[in-house]
Length: 294
Ligand code: OGA
Ligand code: MN
Image (cartoon, rainbow, N blue to C red; front, side, top):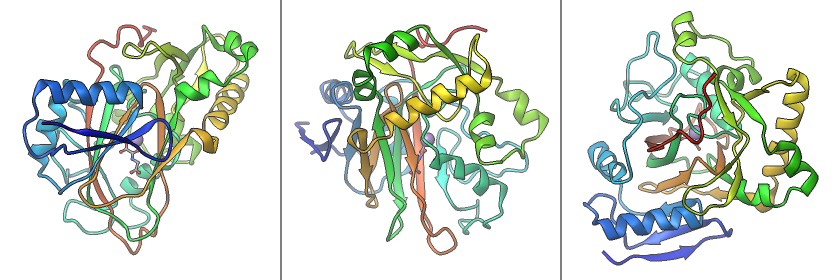
């Protein structure tokens, strides 16, 4: 398969043209997608909507998938296959979620800048989000480049953060929005995880920040001081020059490298429109350099 790589809008996003995610790909094509993600960090592949099986098969070219998808486990019926994460405002009968539904309130946390699964034992590498239905207005996804954000820090800040270890928890990002409605079982399933604040990427060897709204503390620092520093870095990274905004079409596959980006959903009229996206999440093959044991 011969594909064309077209940079889009910003210097860290590219569209891959000539790639059909519904068909098997050869190793050379897979390697080209990986090289494009190493160089850019965000990849857009446009085409027809494909089945859940086809999306899973495509994602498996890049590594094992996260097997545990969904944080809310109490009284939840799955709408999508277990290998995928449901990124929608719909219930298992494909009806719009009530605006006060616990799932909807939890999902609102996706509107905070975050990386996927930094709060899990093994973090996410690639997120591959496929659009089944999109909103006629708003509902974009934004991604920011944490390598460029790191590069543009001054030397004093780079020295200050070099050896910092941050603590990530899904309950931190949800608490920012006042969402605390978790069962004890749900809380026990995802204890806090330690991660370096600065890391070197294995593919490009570039340094990057490792940040998310899930980060709520820094080892050895008072919480208030830690949160101010995390907030300062997140505000820096979210400046317009580091941000790509994706306007969705049905059939799009948006891929981002969670090791060097943050992303967020933008709001839309959830009482009026359905937005149905499903995410396959490729795990880091070897996260040993990232995860720090408690
Ligand atoms: C995700 C996510 C943002 C969006 O799929 O992990 O955060 O725009 N999505 O739906
Ligand atoms: Mn996400």
